[in-house]
Image 1: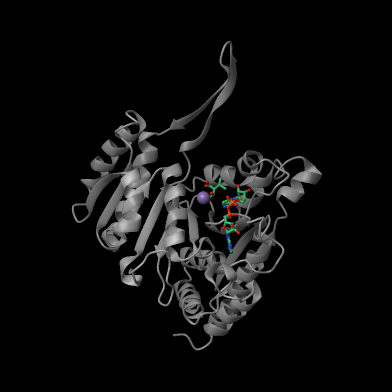
Image 2 (image 1 turned 90 degrees about the horizontal axis):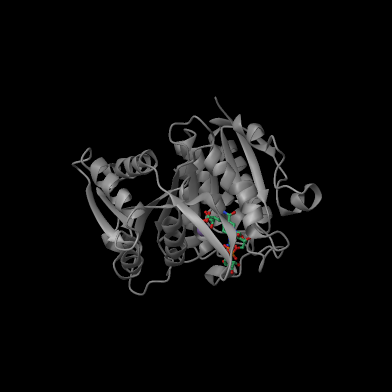
Length: 355
Ligand code: NAD
Ligand code: IPM
Ligand code: MN
């Protein structure tokens, strides 16, 4: 029997609403399949925790997470704590310390959902975005200095390493060779003559090991337009940390809501636990009202099951998610009137009888 030890970080805002929903679905699919044992350990680290402790997690926080099989996270960040303090104090250190360099974000239009694109159906939007998740623009290197005559001058240094680019490019090519055989690489080599040129060079070198994969480089601005105008021409998209961040919120809007989008922060070598979280944030504007869309969190939990060897359970969850949303059981962000709990209940109910 597969024993799964999951660290749960619900975090802030709607993280506290969607993570319990995802856990209910996990428990239900566990009962249905009987193929794994689920042990969850809750950690209260959040902006509220910061208010009491002056830090986002204890100094041994990463050590405590390290012996779990995976981490399920809701969202981090809430008014009252500056975003760079909360995110640099919890989410980003986990991604970086555990070498979760492959941030995998599926962008799909599900049957029955209109999405943001006129005249496009599910067959037109099925992109797997592979975002570099540990370096690049998020390296954390930089500072602010006082310069006479200028005032404060800030630098935020993008750090791109050859091994860092190589491993994410390789991961993206491997995914493409199992899917549509195409990789679109996001660059900006016309302006970023050091980092993006190195990126392009390494991507092309890695591509030589994958003759079955067609690799096309697009400047990220044009690629953003292509997401909207010709999403059917895209299969796997690989991009740097910041490019991937922006493209996946755009992708989420194309899917029909930011609340739908799921992600996996993978350490593909499995040396460290991987982390699964919806793409969205803590949504302070709707937090506490019970209307947050739980689909992104539930889908992320399904990605976690898949990563942990529970493919059947993962498939049951994603199938039920699609049929729930397809049947119009939707939260207000998708034009519906269902509550978070209504959607969770429907997804749990839809697990029964699925094949
Ligand atoms: P956000 O994703 O929290 O919200 C953007 C908009 O989308 C809001 O109008 C919100 O109501 C809506 N939305 C998001 N998720 C939804 C859901 N599940 N159901 C319904 N509507 C949903 O982004 P933001 O407002 O830029 O950030 C709010 C806070 O969250 C900030 O502190 C930010 O730093 C943080 N954040 C955290 C993460 C994370 O932990 N992974 C991701 C993004 C933002
Ligand atoms: C995401 C979020 C984070 C990111 C923030 C909260 C630091 O926007 O996971 O997409 O930029 O990676
Ligand atoms: Mn983001």
